[in-house]
Image (cartoon, rainbow, N blue to C red; front, side, top):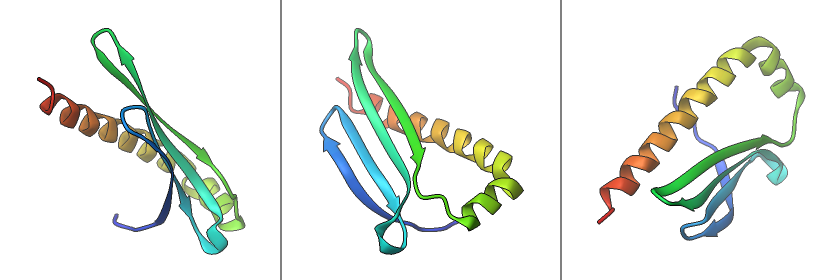
Length: 94
């Protein structure tokens, strides 16, 4: 499935944090995503988070019909994103 969204970057601090909102009509925030980076003794810990924003009738209906599938897809996509971030970070290390 391919789709696109409008996003607004809400935070960008090199080596520390990147965050953005997925927005809809009237710039309503549907979901906020963030990536926080903490240094560790062996490298870095990256935490990916999301928080649902505006909940419409359509999104409530979707949650009832496909909520479990959405949760599983989000978990898979979060894992894949973090694996890609790790691969890029490790390819640039000394």
